[in-house]
Length: 277
Ligand SMILES: [Zn+2]
Ligand SMILES: [Zn+2]
Image (cartoon, rainbow, N blue to C red; front, side, top):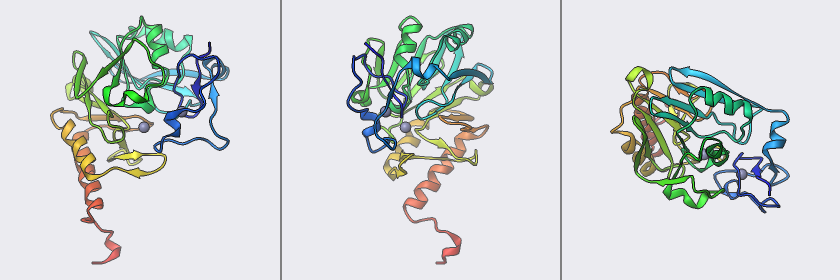
C-alpha cells in the first residue's frame, strides 16, 4: 500500500494501492485543483528535493519551514510546555531530520489542527511519536482523509495540555479553531489562529474569509461568532498560519478593530472618502 498525498493541499490520505479518484478537500469551493487537474505525490517523492527546518520564534515557540513548500505552504508551529509539546497545523512533509529536531525539543505530546486544510501528515507524525492524539474538530469530521485511532474529536473548547486550549470559532470551516497559549509572549498570552483569521501584509490587522484562494467572504454573523468565541481568552500576540503572519503586541485589540472594519464594509457603514456622500 502507498500513502498518497494530494500535491495541491499536502494532505495525506488513507493507504490504498491506487490513489483516490479525487481529493475532496481540493474539489470543495474553498480550495482548487491546479491546471491539469488532480495530482498525487508520496513522502518519498517529496523527500527527493525537500528540507524542513525549525526556528525559534520566541521562547518555547518554534516555526517549521518546508522548502520548497508543500501543499498550501502554511507555517506549522510547535509550542513547548513543561507537560509536553504540541504541534499545531502539521506540515505536509516530514523526514528523519525533522523528526530528530522535534525529538531534541522534547518530542510531541499532542497534535492539533486549526481546520481540515492544515492537517498535513498529522497521522504519520502521530505514529512517529507513539500515536499521540491528533485533535480534529468534531463538526469537520466528514473532511478527515486518513481515519486513525489517534484522531480525537472535540467541540467548543478543549484544554489539550495545561495552558494550551483549543477554541472553536467556526467561520472558514464549521470547526475552525484557534489555539490559546496562556504562557506565551512572556505570560501575556498568545493566540495561534491558523486561517480562522489571517494577519494581513500590514502585520497590524486581520481578515476573515470562507475561502482565501477563491476570495469568498464570511457573513457578519460568522465574524461576530468568531469574536465572541475568543473574547474570554486574553492574548497580546497573534501568529496566523502563513509567513509572516504576526501581530507582535496588542493583537487582541487589533483583531477587534479588524472585525469592526470588516463588518463596517459589509453593512455599507464605511465608504471610501473619495466616493463622496
Ligand atoms: Zn487536496
Ligand atoms: Zn483553510
